Image (tube, rainbow, N blue to C red):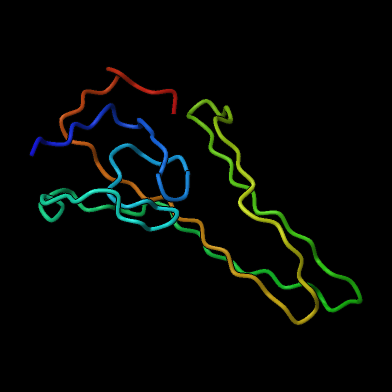
Length: 122
């Protein structure tokens, strides 16, 4: 069996299960949670961290109407330029209902990579 060759940090591919764009290095799809490949060295590699996690709940104010919502995620670079923007979900809340949202950024250090060489635009 040949070793899996990983590309440049930040390189992407498409999940064969849910068609979401994911990192080329991912062993499990972060969207659908399907396993993509077996990694016998997974226990010895650096642990995944969550450097950003935001949670919140919205409830409509007591009234006669519904509250419509759109969950939008925007990613900006160090110069403040927007490099990606996605509408994650939309919906409506009626009096007495609520929705909870969690945004988490997962990160994994890439070993053996020199900064500035072969960088992607993200």
